[in-house]
Length: 118
Image (cartoon, rainbow, N blue to C red; front, side, top):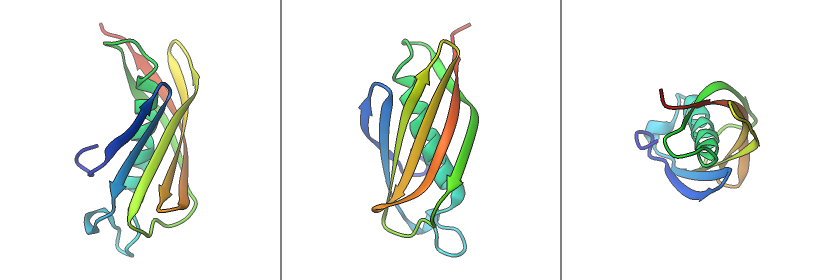
């Protein structure tokens, strides 16, 4: 999260938001926000949303991530919102949206596997 320059801006049970100011290092060859960055932000907020619903000492890892890119990311700021649709004992089903300024640029579905200490 810190390597790409994202900051968590809202944390609630089952819901997390993050923001990132776009810089040249985030752009692909045509000047759009790189698709890998967008996927990373979606994964980040979905995963942290899942973490808010597990006990201390228990973690989550991504077992599946699907991202649909709706528009190129051209602007000044990315905002990602992630939430848990269903929290299970072993799997949490999550969704995420990534916005560039006021435009929805990506939608993601993620499955997070709950990892308990050994």
